[in-house]
Amino acid sequence: MTPLGLSIASHSGLPPARIGELAAAAEQAGFSAVFVAEGHGDALTLCLPVAAATSRVTVGTAIANAALRPPVLAAKTAALLDHASAGRFILGLGTANSIMNGRFGIAPFAPLKMIEEYVGVVRAVLAGRAYAGEVFLAGPVPLDSPPVRRDLPVYLAALGPLMLALAGRIADGVVLNLMSPAQAGAAAAIVRAAAADAGRDPASVHVTCVVHCCLTVNPAAAAAAARAVVPRYVLHPAIPRLFGDGPYLNQARNLTIAGDRAAAANVVPQHVADGFVARGDAAACAARVEEYRAAGVDLPVLFPMPVGARWDYETVIAAFGHPHP
Image (cartoon, rainbow, N blue to C red; front, side, top):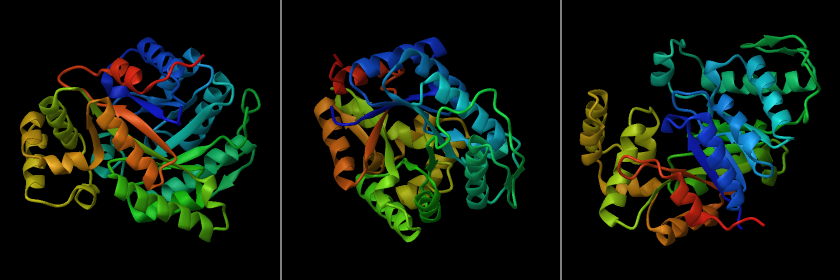
């Protein structure tokens, strides 16, 4: 099976045991990676049942909000998850956005400098070294047992050119999201060019892209489910650059703020949602995934979205899987 990942959202509301069961099903179906997306839960904690239920797939966060955790804590947790998964863990980090972080009581910060030093602290802790930067200071941190991998992979979520370039310079991989295949291809080019400029092998920076998937044989339901994805992200500051700053955007924002996501979805032009969502039957969704590969994405990661009221991970796993012997 061509490498393909699955993302399970913490905000799906599934209990940890069920997330583990879905991860096991994805592994059996031949998926190569299972990631946890952080909504209002704790993505790092939810990686533990994924690790416990599997033995082959890569396990990781795509992504965890770095601003919620001191970097030493993130490093210690990542080391434990790498032990639990026998060296299969990827720490995917992002800075979230100012609106979300404001709700969490986090003061504004410069995201590029913060995440660059954050990665430095994580790597220093895993290597048993101290770290001294402008944002973070950390002494050598003793761990209860040596890390499985001192070079445990750290991926960065990136949407804009500056964060994409930073990922190319310092990260082991990048996590793209909310992008059309063409946008993902352009982002991958920025990452790889920055890696080359930093004297790194561009191929050493793994390009992962989260692909929202609305899988159903009902065309009208698929189209509506795709539009319903947009209000989940419409308050993000980067959205005008990704989705286009049309008149619908303020309407969708205001309706979302008012708590009426259904009405917000109704004002979203279909072409906006279709830009970054794979929708329709299995053949249509698979064809869209291949567009991301052709654009330069190393690992598309399916992010199943509810069609109607149900998060139907089982159908997506069955549609895209090939049973592993």
